[in-house]
Length: 184
Image: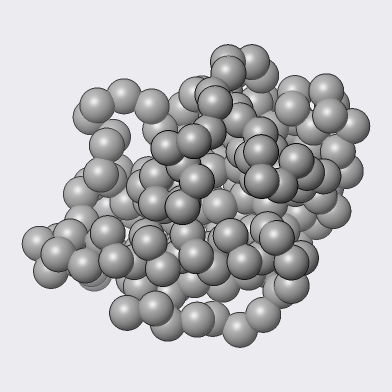
């Protein structure tokens, strides 16, 4: 069983911001419209009926408290960190780039830090989605909570659709850490 956790912030003011890139990608899954959502674990969650072993979790805590939701779901389903995949924005990757990775630090990402702290280990899989670093002098917090540039916004749906295809392939065939993949 794989617990796929898509990180984001609830609320209209966070829609279409860099920190919600994983939620935007989630909506591009080919089977998204067929998912039946339930509420538990301080999250919305669904089980993919084409792949009974795939649980999709969308924490409804703020990003910095994502671990509360993830640890509750892991405990309920008796899932170890080897079966956890966290999909998140990553400013260390250029916009339009994705990478599967296993383990590592939080890199300043408070959602990853919360998951690591409450789940007891950083050794989970990650699908990193690049948002690029902020321009010199720009605060990281304001960068991740701001909307994409008009140029990035123009190709954002394509980026999310391509990343969703990569996620679906990995969820069906096994997650393998690998090199960065430039999608755009």
